[in-house]
Length: 167
Image (spheres, rainbow, N blue to C red):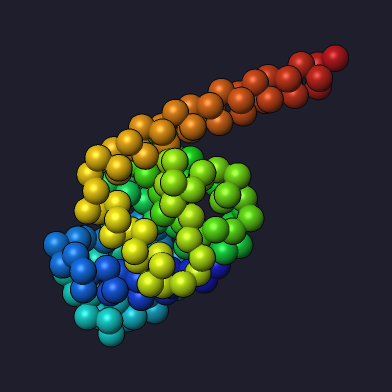
């Protein structure tokens, strides 16, 4: 969907490839914008460096997170950080645009990076994690810890709501 701002990511990908030509990008999910995004990828000469999966069942999406070195998130409007938390639960550090909701989930410099919507700055954050395996793994561990905390606090909240509804 347009609000996911994948055009931004494709443009950033082309900038990343100038610095790190061995990188491959996986864009998971489909939707009405997919054909336009594939056309943009061709226009940007991303060729074999980007794969569009179209729709995948949730279990396969989780496998994609686990197999990835990092997760990039470019939506400026999505306030629920569920996909970010799913990636973090797989010990995958996140580079995301700093938008409402996202900064509630990602702590800049700890379990990922938050960036302004500047393509060069976003690229630099991604490249930093690509080049620094130790930092990437450290952030991944922190990301998993945070996702576990979110999961248990959400479970406690759900349980409290169930008790209230019974009472």
